Length: 85
Image 1 (cartoon, rainbow, N blue to C red):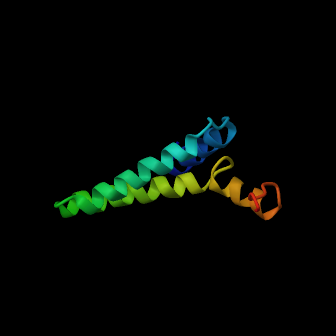
Image 2 (cartoon, rainbow, N blue to C red; image 1 turned 30 degrees about the vertical axis):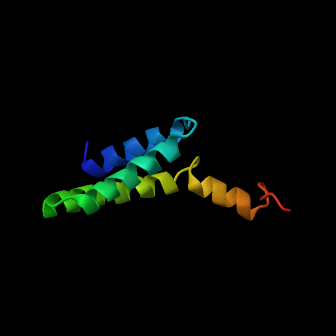
Image 3 (cartoon, rainbow, N blue to C red; image 1 turned 45 degrees about the horizontal axis):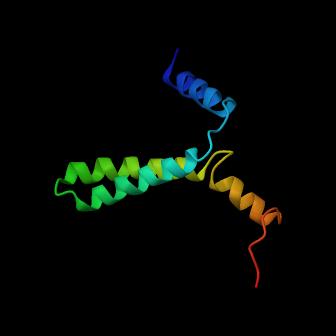
């Protein structure tokens, strides 16, 4: 099995599973913490590694069916209304 087939299989399994409540918020928080750690690190290699991992986690939190994309879709369709005074 090639690397592309393996990645496609992992994506299929991930898309088929149910979302856990708050999963994307936890991933977003972990990504932000990694970006903060990258900014504080003195090691150039650690900055690059933590920054890349943090950015990937934030991107993961923003994508998907239960993440920020779902919230944005609900707001655009009028599904969630902001409280008005």
